[in-house]
Amino acid sequence: MNVFLPRSRHRAGASPLPAGFTLVELLVVIAIIGTLVGLLLPAVQAAREAARRSQCTNNLKQIGLALLNFHDARNRFPPGVNLPVGTASGMLFPSNALYKSGKMGKPPFAGQWGSWLMYTFTMLEEANLAAQLDFTTREYGNCNGPDSVGARNVSVFVCPSDHVPKNPVSYSTGGNTYYFGVNSYMANAGSRCWFWANSTCDGMFQVNSNVRLKDVFDGTSHTVLVGERDSFEPNWIVGGEQKLPNMRGWAWSNFNAMQDVLASAWVPVNYRLPGMVTSSFNASTDDRQNAFGSRHPGGANMVFADGSVRFITLVDTADLPVLQRIMRPADGQPGGVD
Amino acid sequence: MSVPARVVLLAIVVALACGCGRKPDPLLAPASGVVRLGGKPLESALVRFMPAERGIAAEWISEGTTDMEGRYTLACVRGPGAVVGKHRVTVSEGGVPGELRDDQGKVGAWLSSLSGRPIPDRYGTAATSPLEVTVGPEGAGLDLDLDR
Image (tube, rainbow over all chains, first blue to last red; front, side, top):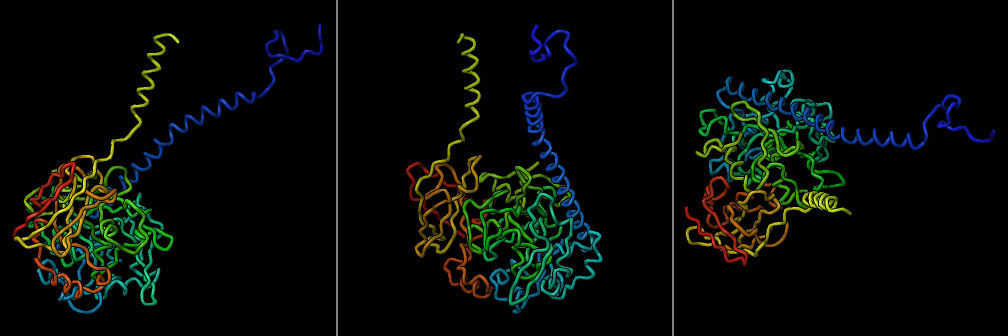
């Protein structure tokens, strides 16, 4: 009999088991839990994204209904951007090629400045906001401080999946800084919208547009009113920060506001810049600025003129004709999408 | 190793390998030509070749701008030329010189100084353009004749 033998749990008749785990047991348990969490995490993230997507769908539904209610009240959709014709800064110039050719006309609301988003406020239960807005001045009158009315965060205009590093965003010119509440949603300006000289003016909204439902020959269920733009663009960096998230604001209302509140189908949905751009603009950023897209995987939400919100997945070059057809209300070619 | 074990191992390796590898990139061929509108060369117009085959991303859209004689040479961001295969082609207003961008009147004057304007709208969008061109593997002169 050896009294110095260590106690073993396997020895019959030994005293009670020692409390605790060995290191190996602990590591095995941690590894198993880690694996299970690893399996679960993508599912949790996907569920969160699904929730954000359905909130975005709801935002677009509200916007679509607001536009249709506006149509009920006034028998026309609001203009994409309402601008006086004249030679003052920001107006639609009489010498403008698109005005001379008749593609852009006189403003539906004489003497007013405003984006389509501003005209939907009264239909979105934001009548108090609409009452504070000054429609007789271009955006600078409404946006001259971070607490000004044009800098207000309007949650129904922001998709929860969108990249919003700042809200409001700011813009400095002539020694002044102006502040803008952001918008994730852009109205359908047709096949091509920006740069304005190349604008096709074949969508539902444009500078001084005046479209009625009876003009939508292709059918309201085949024509887009409003869609999302994805503002996350890591390939466009100016001054150390992403340029695109700052290029928007629902209160923009001047001749260049097309780039802030309208979008088009010149490139497929979810187009991203293929290479790094560090300048303020070039041909490819013009295309990117007005591309429909979103951070929801595989497509983007759009609300149609019948009030339905659909997830559009036309992301290939071969999809471009269909994408452009659903932007064009009266080309006799209704695009077929589910 | 026993024979069934080898078969199982081979099956696993094959199954895993199937998940690897991407679809090969489309082939590019050199492509250039002349654009005429009503028989006259069209200057400063944007020519755009959009591959009509499925599964091709926007970075394979080839573009070129015509010079004074209507000549264009295509390139996409992945390299010079255009994807071999069928394309939908649009011809529309080209870019505006950057220094004019802030002035609507100057842009208007510049546009009206160009010959052959306006370019008919139906050539400007993929939804309406009647132009369909097939680019062969050797590339070729791809002349486009437009009419009003």
